[in-house]
Length: 250
Image (cartoon, rainbow, N blue to C red):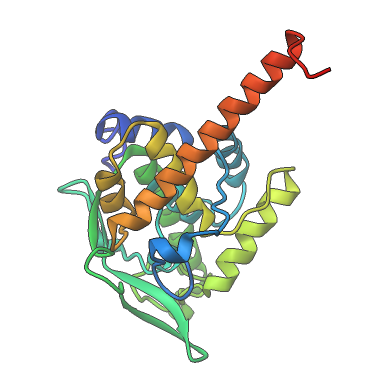
């Protein structure tokens, strides 16, 4: 994509950190705040996200996994991305459809909610991995000729057909244990993205628009979880400091 260089430095703080670091939130749809209560929200953490990005590049689906972490996309959204959804003129990546298995059938359809239909900045790293993907797809197409099925999707099998969401999950789950990283689910990458946005000071409302949450309460629950975790870590450090100073019970 010829706009990779032009995209560098654009998009403010979000673009900078996402460019440095590099699913399906819940299979049944977007959870409400009450559904998230008591659920362990897991993410890679900032340092681990960096390590994950470094090892993921050696896997065929690295471009897809990069977009999952970069924008907090759902797995169906990244698999439903079409080349025509990548607007080079306006430097935008448009989320319009998703790939899902419904009643035993692999289907391509529109995103479920109006909030899921969103336009995101086409950042430099996104452009770079999309170039990798375009080259790989072109090689498959040249090798297979007429056998290759052209459906306009960015991420396809070697024969051009839509990727089964479960295969993306399997590919993702091979990466973590193979490199000694914490094993998480694909949808937890959305929590990682939300956490990084929160740590950058991005308002919950802006994060909601980026992630495509239908309700602000969902984003706020993730943000609140991170606040509780920060408080826990701070108090644990205080406890360790007091013990080191000899302030322990007799």
